[in-house]
Length: 178
Ligand SMILES: CC(C)(COP(=O)(O)OP(=O)(O)OC[C@H]1O[C@@H](n2cnc3c(N)ncnc32)[C@H](O)[C@@H]1OP(=O)(O)O)[C@@H](O)C(=O)NCCC(=O)NCCS
Image (cartoon, rainbow, N blue to C red; front, side):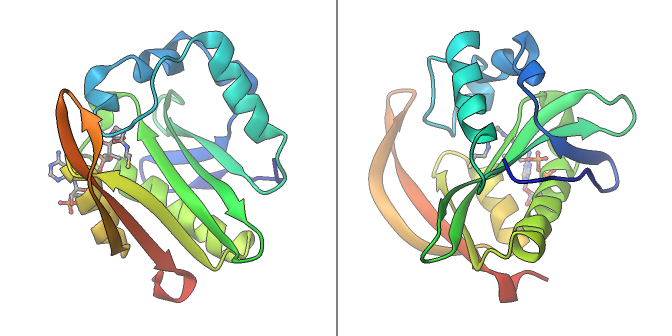
């Protein structure tokens, strides 16, 4: 992983994720139906989660942060800049606040602002993109608030809880990040 510093905002800070963060706390988020309802990934165990994190720690073009509470230092979620396309200079932003006690308090917004600033201004990325599912309204609103624009819709493309939902593709250029 590229060299990363700690980044601070109001309620939270970001620090580089470490292999020791792959523990029952992190794993419990991935087995929580409510947390995962807008995310396709499933079936994680401590072993394959370790492999997943380790793969990213070994990549020079990935920034993978643990989101931590400033008050308690508790690891409450993750945010990462991943899947870098070197030629086009675009990367994907991924966000997961696993500790639901921290939902709706501006943590996602703060974490994204910090990571986006890092991606655009330290890593020099030209554009960030992400995918968000139709059933994840809170996430879509968050990304709109951050300035992401809807770039396309894969219609009835993902299955969650027995229903088919659209998959929205959203993106933001460096110049659009204020
Ligand atoms: C979706 C998620 C990232 C939102 O994070 P959060 O910290 O709760 O969001 P914030 O409190 O920063 O809210 C920012 C904006 O998002 C929207 N939003 C977030 N939670 C909301 C809620 N419960 N109800 C309505 N709007 C909500 C609002 O527009 C809000 O802005 P506002 O407070 O000015 O109205 C978080 O719930 C999460 O990690 N969920 C599980 C994993 C996931 O779905 N990740 C995204 C995959 S694309």
